Amino acid sequence: MNQQAFDAGRDAYRQGDLEGAVRWLEQAKLPGEVSGRVDHLLGNCLMKLGNYEQAAIAYGDALGDASYGHSGALASNRGRALLAANKPKEAIASLVMATKDSEYATPYKAYIALGNAYSQIGDYREAGVAYRNAAIDESNPDPSEALRSLGGCFMKMGRAVDAIEALRTALDFSTPMESQNAIYEDLGLAYAAANRWSEAIDSFGHATSNGTHKLSPEAEAALAQARAAMTAPSASSGSTDAFLAAAGYASGNDPLDPLGKSGEFIPSPEDTGFFDISEQEMAQIELDNRSIRRKHGHSGARGCLVFILFLLLVLGALGYAYYSGYGWPMQESVAENLFTTNASGGDISGLLASDLSEADKIAIESVLPSGATGVTVEGVDRSMTESSALVTATLSAGGEQSYRVMLVRSGIGWKVSDVTVEYPALDGAQPTIDTGVPATDAATAAQSPTTEGSATETSATETATAETVPVEGEQTEVQTETTAE
Image 1 (cartoon, rainbow, N blue to C red):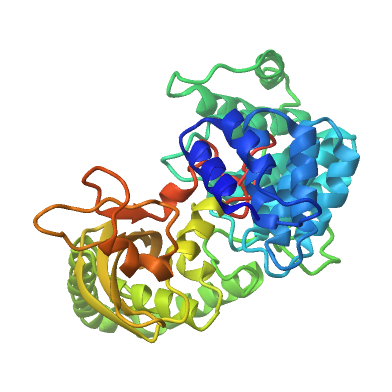
Image 2: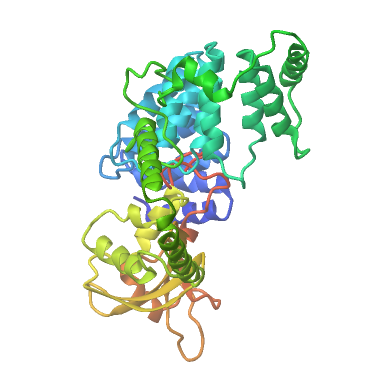
C-alpha cells in the first residue's frame, strides 16, 4: 500500500475534503492489491458525496480482503449504498449477508435497512420480520423506531389490530426525551382502521397535545371520521385491553404470530433480558405476591417501613456515587482491559462506546501499542458522564509511553470514546506530532517532533472524521441509506 497516499487521503477525509480524499485513496493501492482498509474509507467518502453505486463497489472490494474483517459492517454499508442507489433487490442480498455475521456487533442496523429494502419492493411480510428482528436485538438502543415501522407493515397488510399492539409497544420503549407524536399519529390511524373510534380520537389528541406536531391529511380525515362515528349509537365500547385480548393478545403473543405458534413474543419494556419471563408468569407472580400480603396483613407494615427507609439510604448512596463518576466496572478497570486485551490480540469492541463510527474504532486500534508488556493506570479524572484516565504502557520494543483514555458513561459502567498519545514537554515547549505516526513508534516521535505548533496529543478519533450521521460498524456502516460508518 502507498502509505503516504493513504495518510493524505485520511487527513483530507477528516478535514472534510471528500473529493481530495477520494483522489488520494484511489492512488493508495498498488496495482492488483487488495486492501480493505483503503476501500472501506473510500466507500465512506463516496457515500458522503452521494456516489452510491461507486460506494457499493468500494465496499464490495473491501469485503474481498479476508484479512481485514468487519464483514458484517461492510456488507451492511454496501446494502445501504445499493438501497440509496435504488437497487433494493441487490441491497437485500448484501444486508442478509450482514445479519449472518456472528461477529457483527450491531445487527439491528442491518435489519432496519433490510426492512426498508423489502418495503421498497412491496414485500411487507418480510419487511415486518426484519423490523421485528431489529426490535428484539439487544444491541438496539431504541427499539421504538423498528416497532413503529413494524406497525406500518401491519397497516399495509390490513392487520390493524396487530399494528395497534406493535405501536403500543413502541410507545412503551420510547422515552420522554424522544418525540412520541409520530407514533401516536400512527396509533390513531390503526385504531381508526379497527373501528376503535374513542381510542383513535385520544391518540390523535396525544399527537398534537404539545402543539409541535401537525397531523397528516390522512390522519385529519381519520379523526373527522372517528368524531362522526362516536355520535352514532353503534360507537365502540369496552376497554382497549379487553379488545386486544379478544383479538388474541391475552398472553402477549408476537404480532407476527398472533396465535402464539412461534413461541416468541415482542419483548416487554420491563424485561431487559428479552423473553426470560412471559406475561403469564409475571401475572402469576403478582397473584402470589398478593396472597403473601393478605397472609401477613398489617403485621408486616413496620418491617416494610424499615426496609423502605433502608432502601432509600442505599439509593441515595448509589445516586451520589453515580453523580461523583463512580460505576461498575470502574474507569481504571476499563482502561487497563483496553490495553491488555489489545496486547493479547483480543477483540476490544466490547470496551468501546457504542456510538463510535467504524473509522473511530479503527483509529483507536491504530493508536494502541501492540504487544505491550505492562500497563499502569496513573490516575483518573472523574465526572458523572465523562472521565479520563492517564495510562502508562511498557512497549514491546522497550521504554514506556503515556496515553490519555477518554471514557463516557454507559449505563452504570464506562466505555472508551477516544485514546490519545501523551508526549512530555521538551525544554518547556510542547512537541507536535504527525498524526500518522504509529503508536508503537510513539516514544521515538516524542523525541523527534516534525511539525510546528504546540499540540501534545494525537487523538484516535481524529484519524477519521466522525460522520454527521453515524453508520454501521464504525468506519464502515451507514446509519441511514445515505451515510457510511
